[in-house]
Length: 273
Image (cartoon, rainbow, N blue to C red):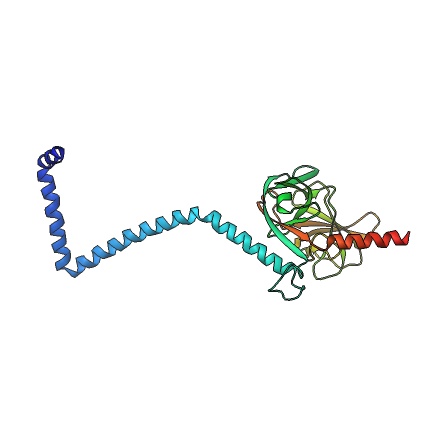
């Protein structure tokens, strides 16, 4: 208390000046409408900037939460899209659903090797199994190859062993999507007959012959078209929609009827022998 008294006594003239200044400003503002307007406008400007800065800071820290919401919303939309022909497209139950969707994140990615793999943070504990398709919001990414309890490795479409059924959008002309291990953003579509009309810029999507991916998932656009050595088939370079150097959030697609389809095909082949 004594220190406070000593401080007041030491700076009494300055404190008195500040007090009188505040009082005079108060009287001035009260007695003149112009000064009132300027004062309140200034106060609103300061308060507005403070609130705007505070909102910006809080929004930055909410980005992760908002991103999670968007991923879950995309998951729901993919679920509806892939199963739109299975009964009521807005009310899907487990008996109607052909494809189920899980979300995950890439924790390791390679794109410069002949046999590239991607590691995701979902595994057996999340019901992830080999031969499930992996996509992003832009298109296909690869196929699950191995799983542990908490993680899975994905054979990237940038893998010389990759072979995925694909077609020209809005047609029934399909072939095999492969990679020649040359360019990280370009893959090849082969086995398309030469009589099929093609144009640079045509969209390539997944075909209906795959038991892993739903039909019509985007892949990329035609970049260049040539004929193979036999002159019977097109050799097509496809520029990918996905930026394979920058992938984070993924969706794992499970065809719940795949095993039934494969078993039927195997039984048919055995009966023909």
